[in-house]
Amino acid sequence: MIDRVIALGEKKISIIIPAYNVEKYIAKCLDSVINQSYKNLDIVVVDDGSKDGTGDIIDNYATKDNRIRAVHQPNGGLPNARNTGMKYANGDYIMFLDSDDWIEPTCCKIIISEMQKDEADLIFFEYYKEYKNKTVQMRTYPHEKLIYNKDGKQEFFLYDMRTITAWGKIYSAKILHKCEYNESLRTAEDVEFNYRIYDRVNKAVYIQTPLLHYRILEQSAIHGYDSQIKDKLEPVLECLSDWLSMSMPFHEEAYYSFKAIAFLLVCQNGICLNKQLSFWQKRKRISDLKQDLTYKDLFSNLGCVKIPKSRKLIIIFEKMSWPSLIVLVITLKQWREKRN
Image 1 (cartoon, rainbow, N blue to C red):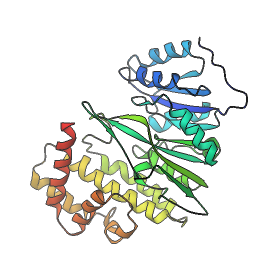
Image 2 (image 1 turned 90 degrees about the vertical axis):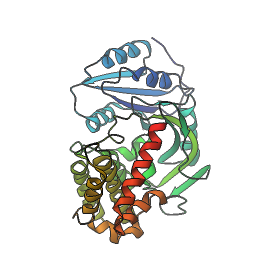
Image 3 (image 1 turned 45 degrees about the vertical axis):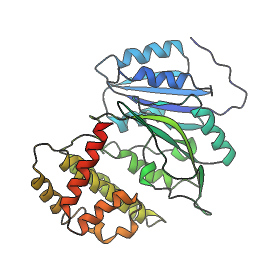
Image 4 (image 1 turned 120 degrees about the vertical axis):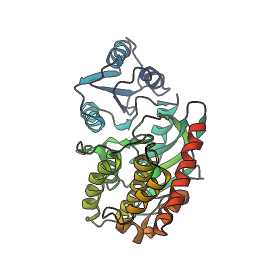
């Protein structure tokens, strides 16, 4: 058992790691956490009913480091596992980490310093995309640091779809109080969760420092073909439609930005990645989406869509009735990613 010397009054970070059948990756993830230069950590690892050796690996690490708490439960899905982690977490700050990813040795030291210096509720940080044969450093914004004040200067769009994931940020525990993930959602649960949380944020900070390594797995939920993606996204849009009715600042931009991303995911993961469809079949299905009741209002609200121009262009292609271009652009994108 390893004991760590913690300075008096030092704030604690809870790191919540949901884990399901990740015996190939969990050790690298946990090594990156226990070897942080910042030591005052509460590490909650939720084994969500794994059927491989994941649970044993977690237990082994817990016997060696008393900051790790291994929680074993029947499989309840990712939102449920994160909720379990939050019930056990006792830190002043909370961070979610996927079990196939890992963080830089100075990650916690840097983000808690920024958190305290700026008295922020939320810190966003950059990451590396880890492809099979390549590492790419990501830059959401061309600035080293940006600040969002709810009632003051806002240097970035808080509800940006590029920073809406559960990972890549640290929360003040107080803004997560009595807030849970919606366990009925089968995808994009982090979007719905974060939109609700962001309404509680008074101050947020973005830093350009890459502190996380995000592993790209072809079989993951957002990178592979999913015949049910449209059906999975519709309940999320329904939840956000209810949230939109609250009519708070930025809600309309946030809602239509996510609807645009949902449309892109349906085109990419639900249509273009279907190897059983011909080019013309893909073209027709994308063309039909324009009249779909779920997405019909998107094309008349493009002014509210705050996503990168390259992605927004695909929405414009649909509005202009150019589905062939959408199929070609997505196919080219997938070909380039496979080369990585």
